[in-house]
Image (cartoon, rainbow, N blue to C red; front, side, top):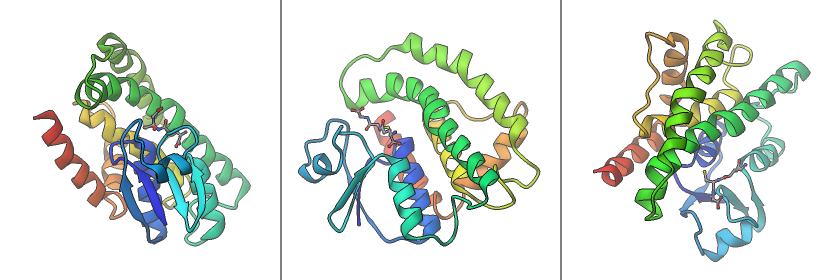
Length: 215
Ligand SMILES: N[C@@H](CCC(=O)N[C@@H](CS)C(=O)NCC(=O)O)C(=O)O
């Protein structure tokens, strides 16, 4: 199976961690924004990452790919069968993808992707507004919602933890790290999730890459 994407995308990172937790073998083919790679273009109609080619079956969108893989490889269960837990996991994935990643995207795209990868100026005012107005409220919500179990849903790892922890790397690349004094539960939970073997090697590789980009 081929996964197309870049390590710095929150959606690609979520998928890579999911694949690691599942123990599914794959090859990562690195592509950037607007990449003309024909395999990537064939798998991703809108040119967005991640995309997948599973022995000729092509699919784009991290959530679509994960739903496909969860049906194909049910164990270990990362999207629970229990109705309430499943609803909660989908809520958190939605929060991670469309709210948390959108906020991190305003900062990461305008401060890093636009100037460093696309050779143009980013909207620094939009990035500053996301950091000062949106991010604190999202972290406050997360702080209030992390259960004592240390996992967002139930007492075990689910897709919810992977989806919400992933964008935190993009905040980090922008110099915005979770403050353990103001958000102790978010700091402890995210450190534990990002240190899992499914995330850690990708995070280390990505940090080396970003150190070069930002040097
Ligand atoms: N909902 C999609 C979002 C994918 C997405 O927006 N990826 C970004 C990178 S983080 C992208 O490829 N952007 C390029 C573009 O919009 O042309 C998913 O979960 O995969």
